[in-house]
Amino acid sequence: MNSPKVFVARLLGLDVFDPLGDRLGRLRDVVVLDRGPAAQPAATGLVIEVPGKKRVFVPMTRVTSMDSGQIITTGLINLRRFSRRGAEQTVAGDLFDRRVRFVDGSGEAVIEDIGLERQRNGDWLVSELYVCRATGGRSAFRRPRGEHLLVDWDEVRWSARAEPQGATSFVAAHEDLKAADLADMLHDMSEKRRVEVANELQDERLADVMQELPDDDQVQILSQLDDERAADVLEEMDPDDAADLLNELPEVRKEQLLGLMEPDDADDVRRLLEYEEDTVGSVMTTVPVVLPPEATVAEAMATIRQQEISPALASLVIVARPPLETPTGRYLGVVHFQRLLRYPPPEAIGNIMDKDLEPVTDMDSVVHVTRELATYNLTCIPVVNAQQRVVGAVSVDDVLDHILPEDWRAMDPEDHPATPV
Image (cartoon, rainbow, N blue to C red; front, side, top):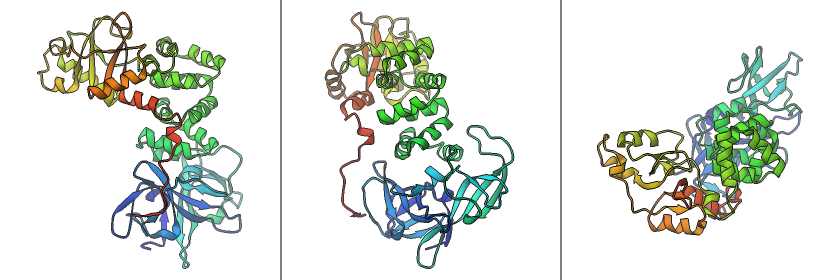
């Protein structure tokens, strides 16, 4: 081993290699075992994210080198999905932000980092805790103010207390993580910890993450939020995802939350709820990019550059008569992103639009729109109603969410035996 002592927060996100220098994945957490108040907690292994966004367990016995620069293993890993057993806990997922009490009775502190030290027999034990003894208040997205201390593992009570575990440091440490990756981490957490982290996230961030979670996890989180915040989060979700989630709730609860949402947002969701399952209307988004024919190429480019517009929706500008909010005026055509790149900024998009692309209707089947997307190599296609008014758009990700198994987010790829990489 390169270093006899390491701190976990400095290791998170590091690449993990085999002896030949080939990258196996990235470190996402460390698993420790609470062995009771008289024995040092032991690190039993690493949680590594391998290609495919799957998190697997690597025993510490297969870690040959670990320091703040890189982690090297024997190269033999088992690709079964990681799951905790018995008294195992994950450092980032379970221990960061945990409140502990000093044994000498001098008060409480919050864990911000954990130090591991290698023993002569090769075991890695928790030797020190980096804690913050709170001297002031704290708010969401900020660590508690107070005195920072490095203490030995036995200077605090190690076992979890009954009070809620904070999640401030966890959220801060993963603020740059993609929503889908953070959702994968939440899925692996206990229900209690999942709710704690959800309560720390801003509404927009929580909405993005929830859209990537399995249905059961979404319902569990939403049921733990107070009514006002649940409605706020639903407003931040894409209307089709919000509709799917509300459909999982009892009718009374669904109507209650719709009544608390902003009227415009609620109206978008209600329109989607009216469609029968397996129709285009049930999977479309009601907020595509729609502009009038007089809009210029420059205006169109500025619109699709907005961060909140997904790459799939940004690939297609729908041209329609006012009003431009769905349901719009009469559908006229579309302008593909690549075509916008070929024309000068002052050009009106009505002069360069594709009039040959036939939209799908909101009552068409999902099978039909899937074939249309595949046939014409599209990532997005407009949806119109019987009056040829634009009511939404269907993107590739909408179709994939529909044709994949309902629990695809919680499913593992086909299990493989231990594989030397």
